[in-house]
Amino acid sequence: MAFYVTTPIYYVNGEPHLGHAYSDMAADVLARHMRQRGEDVFFLTGTDEFGEPVAQQAEREGVTPRELGDRLAPRFQEMAAKVGASNDFFIRTTDEGHMRRVQEVVQRVYDNGHVYEGTYEGWYCPRCADFKTESELGEGNTCPIHKIELTRETEQNWFFALSKFQERLERLYEERPDFVAPDFRRNEALSFIKGGLQDVSLSRPNLKWGVPVPWDADQVIYVWFDALLNYYTALGYARDEDLTDRFWPAFHVIGKDILKFHAVYWPAFLMAAEIEVPRGMFIHGYLLMGEHKMSKSLGNVLDPFEVIERFGSDALRFYCFREVSFGRDGQISTAGFEQRYETELANDYGNLASRTLAMIDRYRGAVVPEAEPAPDLAADFDGAEERVRALLDGARISQALDEVWGLVRRLNRYVEETRPWDLAKDGAAAGPLDTALYSLAEGLRVVTLLLLPFLPDTAEKLLAALGEEDQDLSRLGARGGGQKVERLPPLFPKIET
Ligand code: ME8
Image (tube, rainbow, N blue to C red; front, side, top):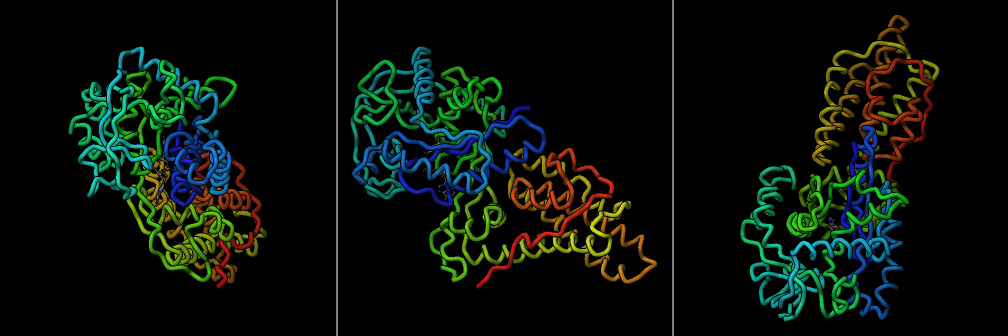
């Protein structure tokens, strides 16, 4: 089966930060998990380079919008690589291939009779690139997100007849209850739809920086329609062959700030163009990076580059999904990072791995003994893979991680229960020691395969040390002993203060 997953494309109006990295890491967890399931995966991320958010920033910096994009797009690309994102393509909306296909689709929507000329009168926030309804306005006609005063605009432009799609959208939500997740976001989008949809601007007359409207050279396409279409256009030119039939429709991972565009405008626009609507979308919350204490040992955790430099990208990925339940907002801090790094990564998992490898090395000449798995331990592992699959089918990333972490803890209890170092002193306990070491090697191999989407670098190292060459989930079934293992330096070295 094909699995196509996307992140938002980010405005090139500032340096990438941890919030952007978060969406990349989340989509990456899903992409890697699906690859382990043997699915045909395509993972897309990229940059949104047109529209006022970019044009105005360029003006402030005294450069052209293209120069700004050329400087910042590589930064986003670099960030994706640094957080371990295994994206198959990086789209820039200034790509020729994107612009051409945007025009084709917009032309089709026009030809299908869903576009008309009209006058827009209302509030517009250039920072959001969003037309605000009266009910969305903050106090004193301000943008509730950017807190800037908005001016009332009157302009002649092209409209997309969104209101015509109200019923079809309501039907879509009814027929596909999991179209938007989590549920509280679905309800938010559905109540926006039920509140009555108004037509939206499809073009901007006073802006030069955009994709030209195919039938009206004086206008550019409203940046949101150009941006949303990236998910579709990329498949047309990312490779020599057109990948659309192979991968469309997509599963979108986005932040809560852009719910309306993805859950309302986007499916309606696709219907208007007669393109299949998305497979689904998951709306995550915000990492709150506001007030935080600086930590001597870590410096400023807001900078993902710095955290990765010191602790590796696995630790950052793990922390974000463990600390904040995926879908909710949550505070992150340097102190929280250090605590989870020490107690969970270094102790729970890192120590378990070091001890297991060291004991097999010392007591069994670095070869996993042949034995039957300990029954009570095996019972606790039963069904775990299915639960993880089901959770990740719904992008429940934190719950899936929690499920696996329960097994990591279970293995630590097993070490304490069996005390292999005592068994090793007792010549008559060779059988029980074989069982304990085999069960630990096997348990560690299984949790590591399940942790691979979250901790890809660590998992790769540890699987190799355990003599497991294949990363596919089909390898989860019990494996006999006999593999040569290798000791490893600490996977998560202690934090030096
Ligand atoms: O909105 N916590 O781009 P953008 C978690 N170009 N995620 C965060 C975050 C935070 N504190 N801050 C940002 C745009 N994000 C448009 C999108 S898509 C067709 C066009 C993430 O640069 C989150 O994914 O403002 C959010 O949706 C996105 O960055 C907004 O990035």
